[in-house]
Amino acid sequence: MDPQKEILKYLKNIVNKLVRLDDRMSVIEKKMMMLGRANSQAYQRVEQVVRCLTENQSEVYDTLCESAGIIEAGTFFGEN
Image (tube, rainbow, N blue to C red):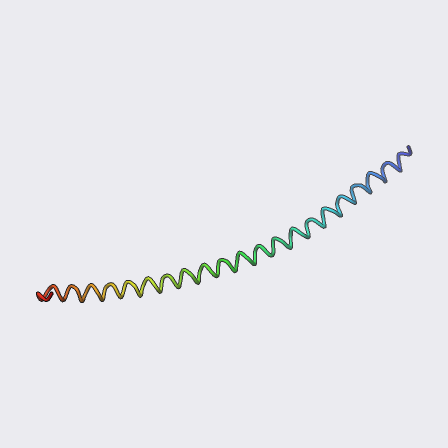
């Protein structure tokens, strides 16, 4: 076989592999961007949940303090 033909065949094979690799890289890039957006949305949702839980915990704490104050006042003055 002619050495030039073999070299051309070899180079064509390399080019085909590079084209397939480029296609795969494009798909991976799109998936990475989607993953980044999904991660950002998930982080924002977790942040909202933590804020909501913090507010709820604060309200529960205030209610418990208020109730404890009423109980303490009731027992301090000898009222049952």
